[in-house]
Amino acid sequence: MAAEKTDLSISPQEANTKALPIVLFLFAAMFPLYWLFWGKPGGGGFFEFQSLIPAFLGGICLHEFLHGITWKIAGKTTWENISFGVYWKYLTPYAHCKVPVRKDAYVLALLMPLFLLGILPYLVSLLTGSAWLLWFGIIFTLAAAGDILVYRLIRQLPGETLLEDHPERVGCLILENENTHHGV
Image (cartoon, rainbow, N blue to C red):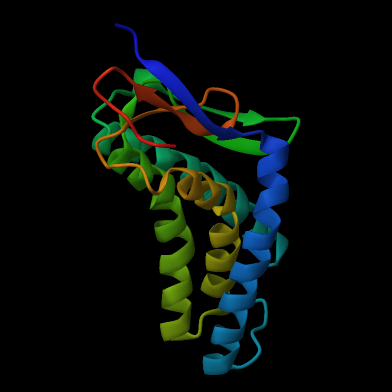
């Protein structure tokens, strides 16, 4: 019997709109904490053209690569099952896993860029006073707002639930058969 699919996705436009409160909250939480420890931060060279462009473009590429490599490893899939691109209409880069993976692997892939590019550099900035790492960490924490939205959509599902990344929208599809029920 073919698996039924329950859609847990939102449009890229809706994701951008719903991400705004998350972005504002995260910035309001992160910036003052640094200021408390280290005083008002300067740019630390981050906003200079020769630093900003490579950091921003490299960070975006690394963000999507981290989704992909984590799907490959934790989801036990192949590079042929992972695609990368940009929704040009919304200026939104994406990584897409074309095959279903367990929810626990999906969540790990979803949140890996948040932790490695956002939270980790931010925490290091709190320890070292590096304004450059502060801005990099804040920007790439904020860049993960869509990932946080998707996590909020799926967080209550059991870890063994099979999820298929939605091919066109932000979110995923729950694969269900006669032996699964998730009460969503």
